Length: 491
Image (tube, rainbow, N blue to C red):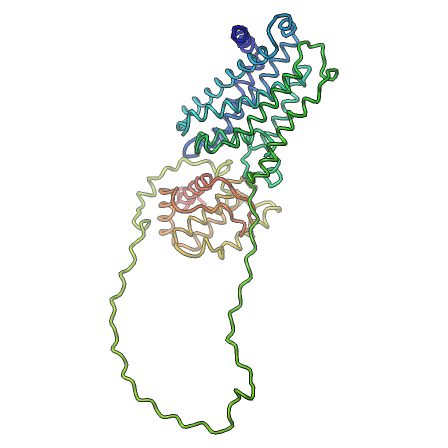
């Protein structure tokens, strides 16, 4: 244990002297945090729904870039050749190096959390569970970092190999792009990337049920980490002159990446892949039952005789009419009691119309040819869309807002043009004063009502996945519509 402590202290000093490793370990995660804040600063609680992604990026930067960069650069300088002359077992050297990198990753995660709290984020729901899942995540990616260090002969090779894993994990692995925004094939592919389980597990401790909702994620991260650590230890090299191409035992790479395949296969088998289900075809309408007509037969044929005379029935005295009291009129809805002061008192600090969140194309901007047909299709189908045309007025207005909110949440190219379609539908359907009151009520109660996150009946395929995102976008569009209805923004 003394050798482990001594080498751990030495590894920490060497890690903090490596500027490139510190860049990946600290600056890289902070850049992502600032970028996410700029994109999602208009959310009701900034960064809260994205901490799983941000903490995963911190671990990826420190473990898959910082750790192998440090190991390979020290190997090139001959540091590891000197270690080999000491009586320290190999496992002690590897374990202390991994622990030193874990300390850096942990401090980088704490730095991210501290900055997020300073920007307005609330505390995680399960802080202890967050540390547990973060540790499992760090273990999984440190194992991957050891494999990268074994594969790379030079520091530039580390960066190239790291990008080959890092970028796919960001784009189709659920780390930077929400899984609900990915096509069906990408959602299946993401099941084979450990980044997906890191994000899900971490986010479950920040806003979800904690460890109870992260059991499978912990299993996936454990298998990935064990396979990576074993392969990295078996392929460990002391000398820079020993090239990977000439090293025996390359088959140890098989279990390292076979763990990814096994985890993805288990996820597929257990049905954990969040792919929107195809809509079932509506069953054909049953035809009304016809009253059977008895077939004509000699037995039931009418007799060819004159009908018997029918005696007149005695006149019946009609019963006296019962006078019932009229039911009381329905109470006035709450939104009718709102005033112009309530509308003016709303918080109108909104993202710009030309931005990424809640975009709103001006009236003189026409969609491009490949989107015009889709926009015109929504405009044609919207008057007959049942959720926006039938039932309570307030519910219909809220559902119409979701038609603008869902494409924005999915980040579809058509998101800029549908708000104008929805806005025109509203002002053509409801009197301006009633519409202002309903939109004001929705803006004051953004969490009320059920969320519609599937508008495929209108030709918009895909679901947002997270109802809170759709609610937030509907809230923003309610405010933007109010600005136009009250004349504060010209149409």
